[in-house]
Image (cartoon, rainbow, N blue to C red; front, side, top):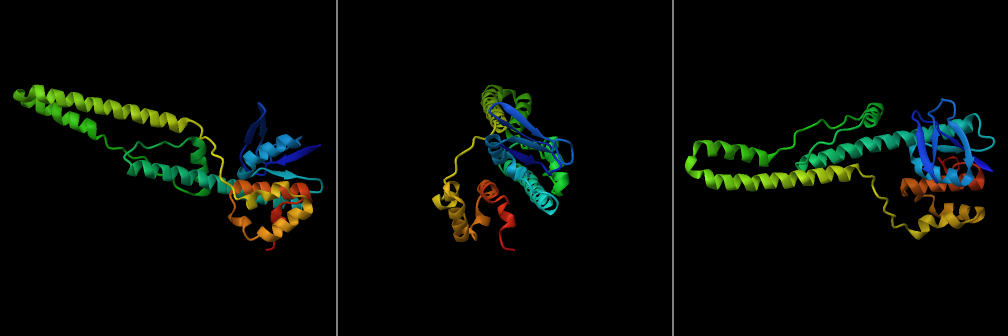
Length: 241
């Protein structure tokens, strides 16, 4: 038995499971709905659910399908906003920390245009070391009696600049590396739903319904997937207005 994955967003989504790439074109391109086995579907949903990917079950037509599509597009837009805001915050921190500006890729530029958030403008990080070197060079040319001492200072500053350059290169290389996932410390009550049957799950919902909105995105997405598996509809359709 398989699960139908549905991409209602305007961007192609892709993920990998056990070395196999799964690419789901943007709506309404052919292939924006694809059926995969349940285990692969769960894995892909955990990755792409926050970006708008959702599932369809038998009978999801008309208003039901459109409701799922709307929810997926809202998650997709929220994801894009977060990417742009995180980028701007990082560059603002770099600017205050006198570090170089990080330039956005084309995808991030497209996200910024779509959600209407302006990207932070490039700036020039001050290079005090090189300014001091230039000043010392000028003094060496005009003060022959101090050439030896100033030459020593120049050497020291060059070593400092070289060290700063190496640190900057290491930082840029570190930023290129994918971020390591740090397993969050989860409240046992928050994740207890994972092992409950349908009746227990309903009771758990009654107890925690007011708290779910404050849960992390991945936990809320997992609750939604669990609700679909048990009752055939996402949690959002069962919650009171």
